[in-house]
Image (cartoon, rainbow, N blue to C red):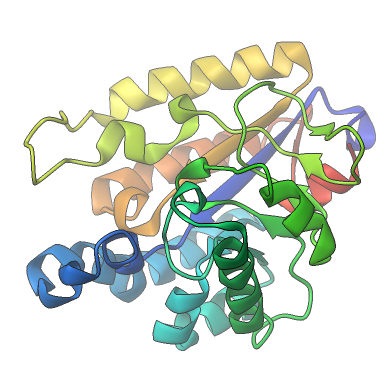
Length: 259
């Protein structure tokens, strides 16, 4: 299934949410610079650091970007595209589509695509904010010329949605940095995991997915994985997978086109 007879594929994806992850769900947060500074770090510090790391390791990644983030941080999106990485859609605002009616969901998709097409004419993938889907989502994905979705947790192998041309690139909370590292400042409920704890989870999943012939898809957020100590964890896993002859490292679009 995989290129050059590889046992599995590995895909490094980044949801570049910046401040929008807070503003999208609650516009009042636009008046809270302390809260938003967490997202600003992603654009200001983390994206350049991540791009440098990916360049050193020779890895092309996929960046899912909300349209409003592209409008707010155009220079960073230009750098992502100039470095040869894939640009994919993550809505316009960072609102869960389950809170929208069909017309609003389509407007989000159209405005998001319009914003991203200013930087790249080739936008093929869609990851919904919060991995939420509605009964209309896949139809909208297909009707707007997108070819893959990366939102569901029902497999470890990419598959084609029945009755559509849309390929699903599965994800999971175990392989999302936010589930391990994102501290909840409002409720003080989330423990911040150590790198060693997350390393054990990610390496275990990688070995299991390889045994099943699937696609190891990491979902990361610059403001989270881009903290200094966590960059070392990302560098460690990039270094490992790029030295394994039986792992094909590719963008989300490349993996789904091979599925």
